[in-house]
Length: 145
Image (cartoon, rainbow, N blue to C red):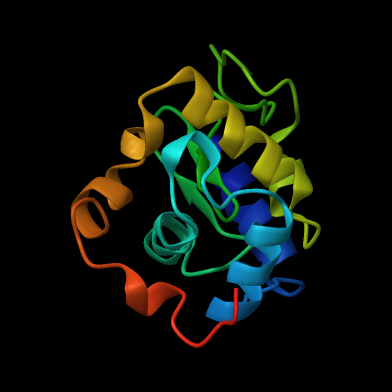
């Protein structure tokens, strides 16, 4: 049943997906105060989003016990309520569907909470694998940010 609900959500949101361009996202994140937030550079954030969602606001990844949502792939197990995950902590006090909006403010607010409450960007495995300790200049190069 859970897989069917998530699949329906994927189909319903895919048609309206906003896929950011790299520099467009860099500018939006900079405007939202992400550059330097909790010690993370703007390039860290752009790299994280590249590898988590490929800049896609509507991406939902079903897992066996939860799902992840939006640009930052925030988990229904810890950060939001999707109405399907049995034991969600919902630390960001929001519905997971808020992270699927083209208005990325809810996603940014929750991502800030993640880095304040957890282990910097280490909460995201994609950041650890693809961004941590790397030269990230390509992620903001030419963006005028």
